[in-house]
Image (cartoon, rainbow, N blue to C red; front, side, top):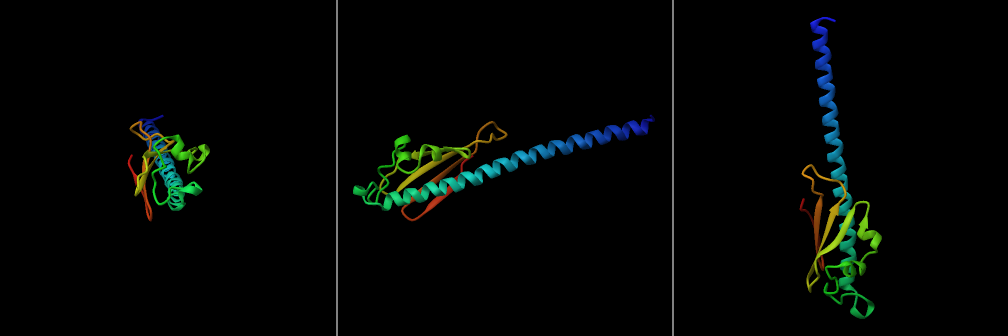
Length: 137
């Protein structure tokens, strides 16, 4: 082989290597984005259940116009969702800040590792008439 052919072969291998590296990065980013979308959907489902809890009278197992019974532990989450829902393939869900008269804050931690070694984290602040989901990490 001549020098030109070897140079073209090396150049071709470099281009293929760069293409593969970019493809791997894009696939990982897509997995994290999909995981965040799924966590956001799950958080909104939990938020709706928290609002139902808020509006259900106390004698019927609800909060009686308050989020006070939603404690920041497993028992608080069990008032809204099953164990399977609070820890599913999309992530782990918990109550970040116990409920008070006006709001409760939920947290989700995703399953796909980010480039810095952490995991996607989202929070959802729920009030009587709204739910706001934010990306924390």
